[in-house]
Image (tube, rainbow, N blue to C red; front, side, top):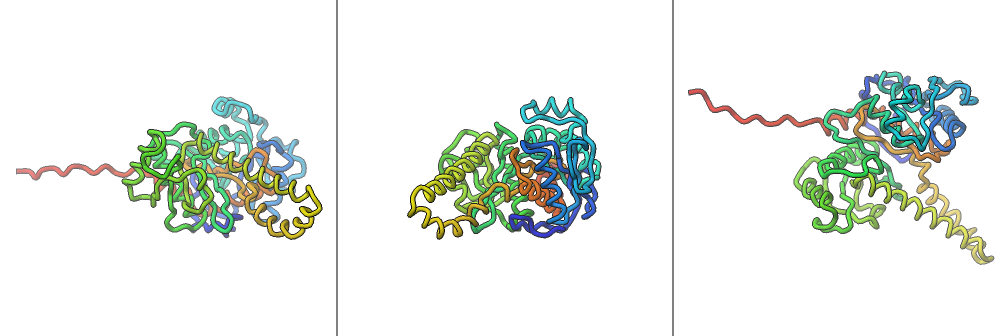
Length: 360
């Protein structure tokens, strides 16, 4: 199944998924069944939903006796769990039989098309990097998070939390990978790439942001449209926005909190008076589709771009619907060849050799 995902993505023709995996619809998506605030119950329910509703093959990775009714899904035994509060690097190195590590190994060894986890974000990244490896030429992987824009394709924000501090060349590489992701996931032929800053002028921002602006403006590999301010993230002025992981994560969670506050305030206002309740009868049917479109669960999760395989990182509080959507996103991206496209985009360019003087 390689059709559009829940956000209307249009993946490319199938090719190698990376990490030694062969392509083919028979390969499952490996799901970390023990990761997340609602694991394993909601994760297992989401995996069963993806299998029944989307017809996707799924492997559940975790402690078999704790998974409950798996609905006949393949189970990959893993006896250890990495907690949400554990130090990622140490946990991955110490807990080699954890569900996260085993899920990454399923992709690396060609037994799974992609992996999905709603567990410890840092540990998911470390597992993917240590087991799948980075693509040749990638300085640092980044988390590419889709931000829903009503009536349009989502905005791709990266980095959304993988790298708290970045160099200007890293931001340029994020721009390259973000453009590839937008093309593969949403069918945008020539994505507009912007740099998140405190002003539109090239002179605004930190020294790293100003250097990145200069580097992006000088290259031709992406369609750079300049700086973008935080208030314009969901304006539709860009398809990809690049920033460091600290700023990106703060921006992402600020947007989530703002949207939640607005929704709750609107509902309270509608319920506070008789007039409000009457108005709600007209407004709620109009507002409900918008709220559903902005619900993070509809996006499923974010891809860790730059590793040699598809790794989807979901929100820790993911519901069964969110897990099912994450599995579908993972399947579509892997089947659509996004890793191969990323590999070509970041491959080191050969250094031109100076011509030798002719022999005399």
